Length: 343
Ligand code: KG4
Ligand code: ZN
Image (cartoon, rainbow, N blue to C red; front, top):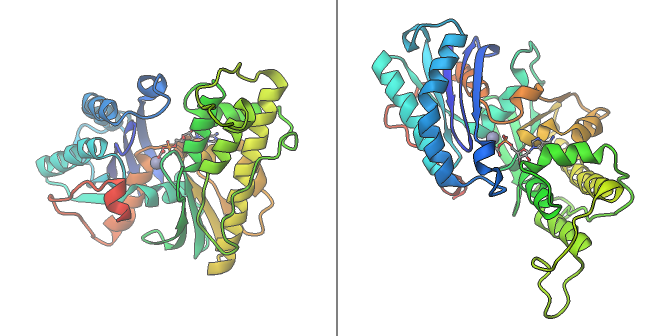
């Protein structure tokens, strides 16, 4: 039984998971309301909110799992990379302190690997490996070769915006709310995806990298007009599209994202001779993407809806793999940010 803690971005979460897949509790304190007016995560606001939330969230996770304290779990796990430094520090410090105080082993896990692992939560299914793993969220869009849950190798990633980030920015361009993904996903259902043909940035023929910023700009130009000399389209006045036009833009944008994602998964699958496909991260909740992968040529594994976006259950679950191997972290475990991670 492992207590997991997650604070990599803007959700404070704690969970208790038994045996790697049996989720006894999974408490998520979302900060969406705090960041909504900025249409994106403000790191300083996020870390302050984590400090306020962390102990109540941990207490609630233990109580909901009918536990009386950390002394009743076997280990404390924490997502220590990658993420926003101020946010990560709160979870890592809390996990270290709880582990030390209760005399329990500490297990640091990679947040991205945990997103992949999330497909196994509350199921008895294990994807055949090697698998192509795609983590697609507000912070990541990356393809992996998943040889086992702890043998995860990067195949390609976005060279600019993450796909969830593109959803959030396009929603902002269209005058919609934050986060943009679920709103555009819903609008796309009533739109005609062929009404507007947005670009499908595939990069080189063999590339497994992604690029979404050009697609986002194409939506901007579609809505506000292509820039002419002396006109800054970002500031030009516009009345946001509404009704069918709005739905068509959402459907066209979503279709472009999905086409690119499916093509890259197919390329990666061929490259590594994959036996299955694993998707995780906030964008794996996308209904259009799920529908598009339904008839894929390999078995496809999506997380249950509630485990798509950031949560501690996936970290506590993955930590069980390390626990079985008695691979623990030291109390000098350090938070690792995105940029340190990429370097
Ligand atoms: O995994 P997550 O909670 O946090 C990060 O690690 O980034 O993902 C949040 C992202 C946001 O960009 C949000 O717009 C996107 O996931 N998202 C979606 C959907 N639900 C959430 N994108 C597309 N379709 C959705 N249904
Ligand atoms: Zn995430």
